[in-house]
Structure formats: C-alpha cells, structure tokens
Image (cartoon, rainbow, N blue to C red; front, side, top):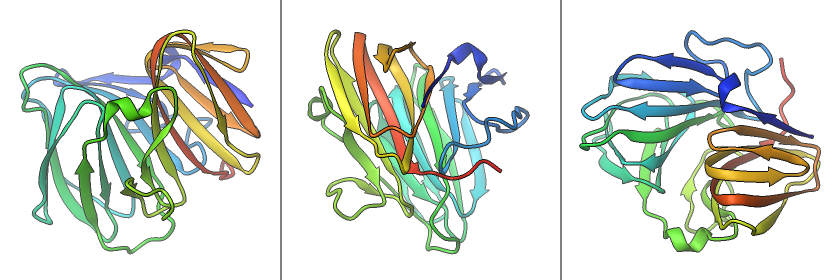
Length: 237
C-alpha cells in the first residue's frame, strides 16, 4: 500500500511565531483516520520565526526527534544539556520518566524542521538527549540511518524503540530501492523536490504512508531530500 497525503490536506495552525502543519492529529487538529502510522504518533512540519520558539515545557514517555531542514534549533533541558542542531542534522530526546526542555530559533532567518514523535517500547526509561552532525554526502542516492533502536545501526543516535529514522538525497532521474518487508510500515516525507513512488507522485512536504510492501522504489523527478521512519505495524485504534 502506498498512500500519498498531499501537503494541502494536512492539519494547519499559524501562531505567528510558529507556522505548523500536522501529518497526524495534534493540538486542535483531529482526524480519526490520522492518529498514527505504525508507532509514529506525531510528524509536525514547523516553521519557527527568528527569535521564536517553545518555552520550557514537559514531556514523558515519548521518543522525540527533530530533523532540521533549514536554519538551526537551540535546545536546553532539565538534565543540563544544551546544544544547537543545524540543517540536515537531528537531535533525539527520550522523554522517559520526565524531562523539561525549551527549543528556540536564535538565528536571523526562519528555521524549518520536522518534529517527529515515536512511541517508546516501554514506559519509565531514564530520560536523555543527544545530537550530532551527519555528513550530507554520505546519504546521496541511499537512505542513511540517523537514529535507531537497533544496535547494529552503528553511528546512529539511539531510539528507545523498534524504529529507524533515515534520510536520503536523490538527484533528479536517480532511483533508490528500499527493502521494507511486509511486517513493517514506514512514513516518508519529501523534505525537498519531487518523486515518483510506485506509480504515484509526491511533491515537497507531502507525506507518504507505506505498508504491506516487500520493497519500495523511489525515483526523483527533481533533486529530492527524503526523510523516512520505519516501524512495526500497529493496528489503528
């Protein structure tokens, strides 16, 4: 199954400092058919104005990944962690038993990022946070695992759940094939560019829900940047 979810069909709220688009039900946006995909519970496409951001607030029992598309995000939390994550890189926060944090755009230009929440494999873990740069050239023409709950994915930031977050860049005309497996699902977002996936088209900031596929073939019709999370199947409530 390949279901393209055009950007124009997603939830949306503009708060001035934050222009947010929701792939799944979140805040005031509710769609019973878009509560999650596998264990991905939230995928927000955020544009944060210069000087804007999220004041200190709590989280618990959730794996939270921030993928920065443009600009940078500055993080500070109750564990004493501080850091700045730039475009193309990610930060991972495992909320566990509880953590308080803030995120601000301290740059002179808007920050564009994906905020992705994934359900943990169990509750009550020790909270943590981490970030690291990933060489952009390494992901040309293939998916590179940036965060994972699998020990064999060396170099990836740790997720406390059975999931992988991957990114790829794909020059126009190039095709990549990914082995998903029929017992797994994935949610893909086109961060930039345009692709053909299966026999369907997806453009910039569109979402694509994937399930019941041994493999998936993706061709860039324009230079593309892709972000995808693979998880186990989770029945919709």
